[in-house]
Length: 190
Image 1: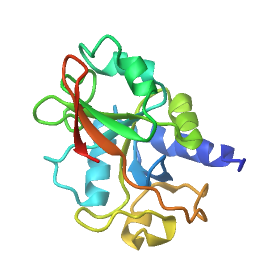
Image 2: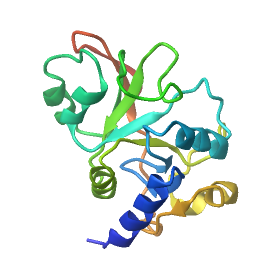
Image 3: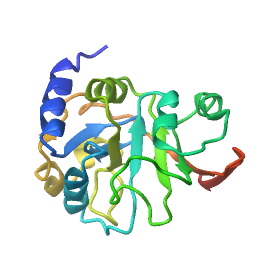
């Protein structure tokens, strides 16, 4: 396995200073920051040139962490999330503890529990959720590989992760589902 410890250390410094990172996720390359730092989230919106009405995805390292950030999830939520066979982002109705610019205007939050070793290590070391939004200017094509990321994105962040820059495998964005109070899921993006 490739050593990404230096990248983790660099990301930690940048994230703790409220800056934005460019990093590989379990799906596509993403822009990220400490999801609990309102000013850092503002910087992600600025780099991405994204309208503030559009909320962002949050990454967690473990399914049990959902209980800390969602009010009244279905009782079997951990088992449900751990049963996913592919990257799946779940929209939950009642977000807890996030700044207003992370939460959708209806009070919902989109959370994906990552299986990516780099992302898991980073979130566990930071001990906070991170934002994950595709590393493109809003409205432009989603970059599946590092080489397709626009220079203004690369130049607009505090740190660019080296790990997996040479990975040419193409992954799709995550499946997006809406979960109701009973645990019933409606697929929003396949």
